[in-house]
Amino acid sequence: MRTTGTRPLTADDVVEEAVRIVDAHGADALTMRRLADELGVAVTSIYWHVGNREELLDAVIDHLIEEMGTVRARGRGSHERIVTLAHGLRRTLLARPQLIALAHERAQTTRMFQPVQAAIARELEVLGLTGADAERTLRALQVHVVSSVLLERTVDRLGTEDPVDALDLFGFTLDAILATLPPHATDPS
Amino acid sequence: MRTTGTRPLTADDVVEEAVRIVDAHGADALTMRRLADELGVAVTSIYWHVGNREELLDAVIDHLIEEMGTVRARGRGSHERIVTLAHGLRRTLLARPQLIALAHERAQTTRMFQPVQAAIARELEVLGLTGADAERTLRALQVHVVSSVLLERTVDRLGTEDPVDALDLFGFTLDAILATLPPHATDPS
DNA sequence: ACCTGAACACCGTTCAAGT
DNA sequence: ACCTGAACACCGTTCAAGT
Image (cartoon, rainbow over all chains, first blue to last red; front, side, top):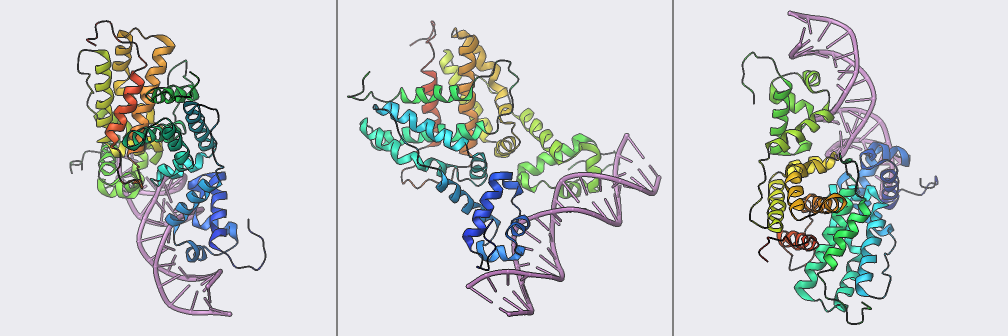
């Protein structure tokens, strides 16, 4: 809630309140009328600041991605560093289920991968992977992280008695992808 | 459109018309009023047959999955047969974008994997994989197929100049997963 | 530049009433 | 058993009007 002073409303005020509602109650709960109420303003004034609901939701995605702290690589070997980056991003994203749902709805999923993209590309270069090969591995990792997170957020409970743990499954395929990479010269393996 | 006779409306009539609308114009276009109009009936009569919109959408998913033809394994080796099953399911699902979107929205994604589940499990058994190990590989393949398809339907064009082909990417990770499997005794490798 | 109320064209759902 | 119209409580958006 913005301060109750006489300062005029800004687009940022609107987006921040929208983020608050989406975070707390999901994207469906973000109606223009509710948003206006929460801001203590007429519905129509929202439109002056953010255009319409579509544009507002895109702004909300941007805001949520910016809020995500930087994911850091750990360990010495590049394989290990990539594993920690992938797991780190997965964890960070799963903590923001509304972002995941929203980004998917609005076909903006790949933007969720950006916070680690450069870091992983750097590690691939250390491994001597460049050009099309690096591109392909990078995309494979992107699809794996983003889509796993996408799916994990919507699993219907399977009929099976002995459910496989999602984290374990994530690591399994991640390892399989990394096994296609060349071992690093200074890798202690 | 059902025949214009005096026969009373059935739940199947409603679901079939709903499938038609979803297939042609997407799930958003499926409003109770439009559906009623298309059936030449009052809105309220829909509720008598299918409960409400939620239940109707679940029925639509069931219908769409049933409509999907059986995916068949090809080739002699189990590795090859699993590859063809995975690719076949992927192709079949991608031909039904509305199913994918709908199933995801309604947290029913894993049902899309059912048409090939038993067939893949059989191949894993041939490879000597049983119990928890088989379960894990099966789930990894499920996550891979379903989530790839999920993501592929919503890719925002990436900024990169030289886009990696989605099919190639799918095969790349699929191969990586299969590389973790034991080679079959009678496999001609 | 910023905000308002009224109005339009939609939604899903309920319910009492008809045959 | 099956279908109806009226009504309720919502939506997003536009637009002319205010300051």
